[in-house]
Each structure stands twice: as C-alpha cells, then as structure tokens.
Length: 124
Image (cartoon, rainbow, N blue to C red; front, side, top):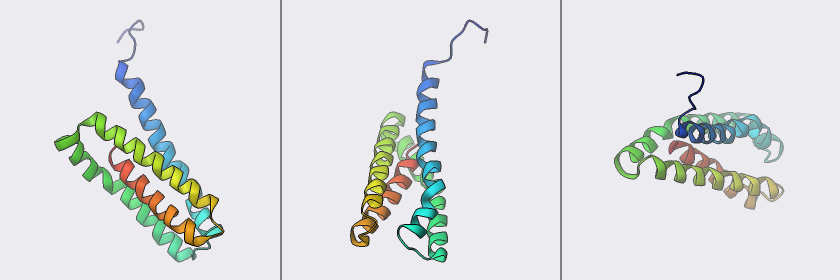
C-alpha cells in the first residue's frame, strides 16, 4: 500500500466498534470488584467467584453469538444487537449504582446489567 492510498472504509467502523466494546468490558472490570465489595457489601469470596464467572462468560458467549451471526443474522444485525445489549447493560449497571443503598432495587439491576453485557459482548 503506497502513501497515497487511504484505509478501507470498513476499517473505521471496525475500530470504533472494537474500541467501544473493549471500553465497555475493560471499563467495568476496573471497578466491578470494588463496587461489589464497597457499595453492595458482597463477601470477598463471592465477589471473586462472580467476577470469574462474569469474565468467563464474556469470553465464552462469542461462540454462541458467532454461530447466530454466521447462520441466521449476519454481521450487521449481530453487531447492532450486541451494541444495544451492551448499552442496556451499562444503563442497568448505572441504575444499580444509583440505588445501591436499597439492595432490593440494586441487585436486579446489577445482575441484569452483567448479563446484558455478557450477551452483548457475545454478538461482537
């Protein structure tokens, strides 16, 4: 490729998509254990187990999401659905942090947020 040629059009979309997907996952990872222990008052052992399950599912769900994308939906629909699911998961975690003093409200938002992020990541 010479200096006058531009990057392919799809490269910019790929970069933006991967950037936000990684920001969503790794941004959560940085504060997830701290939030579970400090705000939700989870035990350290339970926090460690849940963190490991969350990480494992984030890396396992692309197998299912890739199968659905290849067989049924295609790349564009899968990426769109994955992005929407991850956004819904982030908003759900936001509401969990807003209501952390009331665990009856915070816990459903927290668990559904983690689940939505796992599913959304799977479609990427």
